[in-house]
Amino acid sequence: MRLCDPRAAWLRHLLWLVLLLPALAWAHDLPEFADMVERFAPAVVNVSSTLTPKSRKSDVDPRDPMNDFFRKFMPRRPQIPREEDEESLGSGFIISADGYILTNAHVIDAADEIVVRLVDKREFRARLIGADKRTDVALLKIDASNLPRVTIGDPSRLRVGDWVVAIGSPFGFEQSVTAGIVSAKGRSLPDESLVPFIQTDAAINPGNSGGPLFNLRGEVVGINSQIYSETGGFMGLSFAIPIDVAMDVQNQIRTVGRVTRGRIGVLIQEVTRDVADSFALKTPQGALISAIEPDSPAAKAGLQVGDVILRFEGRPVVASADLPRIVGSSKPGVRANVQLWRHGGMRDVVLTVAEFPEDDDDVPRQSPVRRSEPPGNRLGLIVTPLSGEQRRHYRSEGGVAVKDARGLAARAQLRPGDVVVSGTRKGAQSDFRSVEQFNRFAGSVEHGESISLLVRRGDAQSFVSLRVPD
Image (cartoon, rainbow, N blue to C red; front, side, top):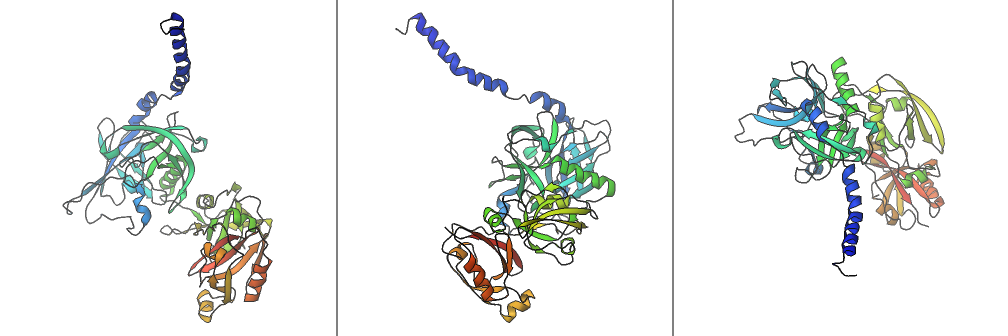
């Protein structure tokens, strides 16, 4: 068949149509953002705060290596000369027609003056009603009425892959709109144990701090708060505070003037597959208690090191990071039912939640998790009795000191000077009060079995899991 044949041309057109149909269908399914943005953008505001040199302070620890990656989106103008005031820029959004505004706490931290600029160019001096640094949420108030306001959504209905829209003032450019998808939910970030962050790939840059994250129904589902970046600019990893967390904070600020949180006084760590096997847990879930504060609610209720908390007040603890959020959201004084795994069986314990001091970070913290690499031969540990100095330091007669760590133990990052307090295998825990007890335990471990050792190093204490090879 020749190319000039009319039948050949018809076939070529048909082929192009077949190839284009999927692209046309995909384009038809793309969301429309314009109407939603036009309706709700007027409720998004620009927030600028002024700091005088005497009040300026930094909340950044220069020794923290993560500062190069996790950044608050708050651009600051050059500090030259140093005697001049410093201005920071951010975003916010109106949650009530009478002038209440949500933003990030770091946007207005230590500010002497806060100015809110609306989309219609009106400017208002804002009052700080209150701020909570733990969740990075601040509540402002301006004297105005009949203001446009946002609609609050339900972050629990978000699904990974849903479209979201961010509106804010990156680099000082007002009313910039970007779109992306929800990349993940319930993210835990360093030193941010109380917020289950929403991760999104919507382009977020300095100045977007405190701005809203919308779903396609035009409901606010989060407050843009942090980015993961080596340069300070957008790299596809942005994090937002779920709006239900922020609304709970602002409600407490408005009603009682401060934010209260529960505490139970435990140090926790993740339950890995090897830890679960050694504790005879069918699935690696929950929060493993590695230390308990004396006279804390956990201690008074009889919780023990080695307990795995699976539910707290009926709410499941799937990952260890879930526990600080659940406990933190509990009201102090509440009698909470705790479901836990101990010695191969389920237990129910009731404790009274306490309140941790306002300026303290005493929430259930996660201890450093030492993950073992592919195992070598047996445990590889040589131990000796505790020295008199170690007994005095740990105020305990129990435990054995590590003299040498080889093979499997060395790969699990155990080292001379560590104190091994107890061991758990098949859900049963053995305390070590002598070298002979430890050696009997180590000799009973079978090939292919996982065990967990409770190890003290300095002032820290955590479980170390080891799996003996087949």
